[in-house]
Length: 322
Image (cartoon, rainbow, N blue to C red; front, side, top):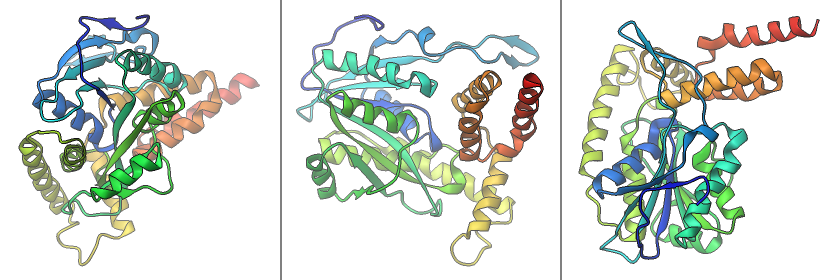
């Protein structure tokens, strides 16, 4: 198949396609990786990265500079002995530039259709003004009212209005346009933790998926990760003199303080850093892309860190046009 490299062609029973990329709280990426490990899924195909990704920087470790590998985009399969549907899991450790999202998605859909897949499942995060000690509720968006009614019956919350940003949301819309059906499960995460792994939300979406598809999977590992992460956040909030000492729910101004502090004490996912660098490169060539860059910086609460570079784009563009 053009544009897809196969190492084998597994025979599968009415497979569903699960897709995941990095994003806020790494909810989707962590959930898909956990499925791959727990179900002992086997890799069988990949999309060569050169057409959709390119290098934007070099890495320096212990004073030595090297060129990083391009992101991977891999297909895994697993047999579901406890249900009537097997699974193909597509996972990438970076999101392509959205200018290539349509072609990239159609490449994945092309492979899916070759296995007679008609249902796609994606995961995403839903940042809300909740506390990190709360259980993560699960929301959903579906491609049809029939699917929506099934998800309502297992106690999930329907997303009536809004948008699901990035590939974890966009892919499902493209898949629907290409004739596939499906749904996205969104795990709640606190607004002030978007830069931190959120295994509690990943656990919530996988638990919901298991109920719906009769999927037998041990989620103990994610439960333990969630407990450890909650303990670490508690320590951090104590250090920041916020959280435990505040009376009542966390207020909007507290959220902004926490987000700012966490942005200083935590790291952006590598894929997001790469995406920001890509957008800087695009904006140097085409200043109209700066709006997309600003939206990405604001989404991750890191505009202040990049402010000088961002404003410099406009200075250089003005000098170029004079």
